[in-house]
Amino acid sequence: METPNAFIGKTTLPAPEEVSAALGPSAQVWKQLLGWLAEQGVADQEWKSVSPKYGWALRMKLKKRTIVYLGPCDGCFRVAFVLGDKAVTAARQSDLSKGGLKLLDEAARYAEGTGVRLMVRTSEDLADVRQLARIKLAN
View 1 (cartoon, rainbow, N blue to C red):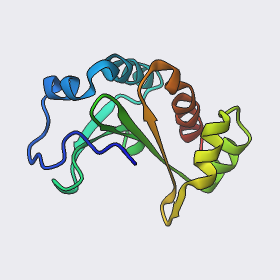
View 2 (cartoon, rainbow, N blue to C red; view 1 turned 90 degrees about the horizontal axis):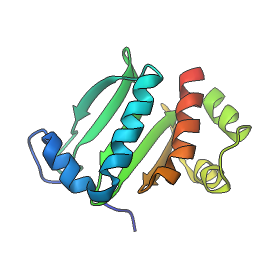
View 3 (cartoon, rainbow, N blue to C red; view 1 turned 30 degrees about the vertical axis):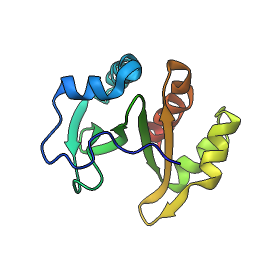
């Protein structure tokens, strides 16, 4: 079963303290990822909620292009990428972990691209996230 977004039902933008509290021990990993993304030039942040039914997600953008979506959950967070065909091909040829490749193989295909979602609890979980972010930036 998938871990739900921590802010389901919340109609207002979550405050930074609320995000940290929801993330719990993974708050440091969240900050680590945001710092790394900023080093890659992906520093524009935009919080979005399509509906209180789905909660809130942080879009990390490079100019107007969304690179990755981060969804806070209780004690962890979800990372989502929408990859075009070139990026999917590059990901299959990269050094993604076996688990990362399995997620890619099982990912849903949409008109916008292939949607890949990963759960992050510890800094060890960031290797595939960084790899997919590099691929997304290059493609």
